[in-house]
Length: 139
Image (cartoon, rainbow, N blue to C red):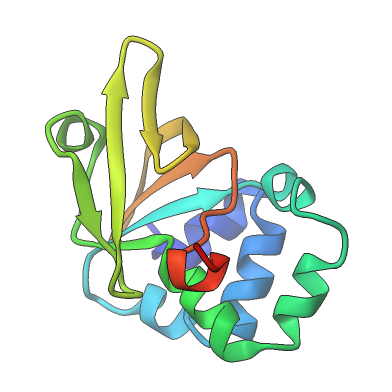
């Protein structure tokens, strides 16, 4: 198997996520032997951001780093774990709200499209939106 970054690259639909992770200098962390869970927005999820948002974030690396780190939870949290928990602490330091229902699992307001893409150092869950920490979103 491959690490989280290599696994995401092979999947082919996380080009923007990998671009921002590289710009935010988080790829080394995601390649480390520590175990992480990556809530990975697809390229389509990035396309839903308001026009100019991504370009503006790429100019503000500290903010970008917070946003990317907000998609990474500590440990190897698989789908059977997700249905049993209500929150997960992120690398950024905030908490993600996890909710399970008959309609599936959501992380904050993002729907998990696919679970349990396994990597050597953790797991990837595919989500349909880019997550924004409250301090960045200005809430």
